[in-house]
Image (tube, rainbow, N blue to C red; front, top):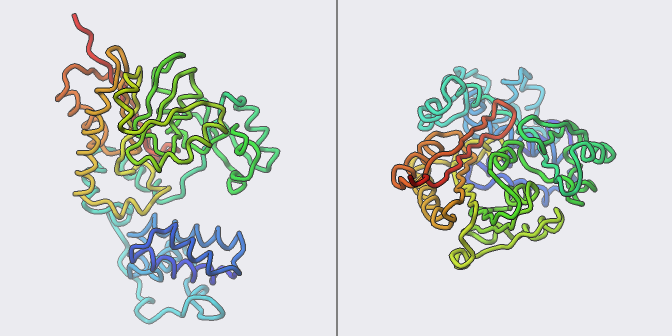
Length: 390
């Protein structure tokens, strides 16, 4: 495919995404229809689509319309490329620009230029303060690829060497002792021996740092209450000789966890909701709760545009319910940990404060946050312990 043909494919896929089709599904459907497209073509089209979704507001403004053509036109203008070199109508290239498309629109400003929804910008700005603009700008770019080195399988140095032998260049990331950032060859990871053998796992460096803040020691009975795919479950199991349990309100999310645990060389017991009470209490319960995902919008940019004020309020209600339920599973001297991949105060410290106000027997022992402009996803963690009785 020519570069122009790749952009035309992106235009067609973006129109589907704007109509409500998930980007991954639209890309998969296009790939099945387009057997002629090679691996480099598919990667390029994918990048065009996700770059446009990350920058949907500003590209639409620069392109004059919230359409696939408008987004691609806006991206070309932002990059300083002459659109007439692409919109030629020749071969499989996009049709030539119309007179209306040739008119330069007003430059985007404010939240539009930063690609943040107007309704969210006040909360976003209040939560991040003088770092809000830097964070918003960082989310307009692709996220780095981070790996967690499984210390049960080898050292960071051994992982770096093993990856290099497969043509994958990685270097230590300062956010966590086990974190690597891939700087070259990321698309080779899935088939690489270090990945298949469980020496490394895909996991953001801040996600790893969250588990580093947890007071884990050998022999502890630990529950990952909202385990999802189990990334933090495995990270905790790699840190100490714990008895590891995983639960999720939607068990299907954990379907790959047994295989991942076997690959990592750790044992994890999966619990249904009905099993929780009889399996507890636990020395530590981690609640990596459903959230806005604002800290990971570089990876899942559709979430930024599909979130609503009502949806955010509902998420905060669910977060509070999870904290209350999980607290009842913690042993008397145990630890309750709360985490989000959000940078919004309403989901982070404000949520924790509400819990402590409603449950005066708990104290905040530790908290920390990470932000996207510092080279990781945005994450937050709070560690709660029961107040000591006099």
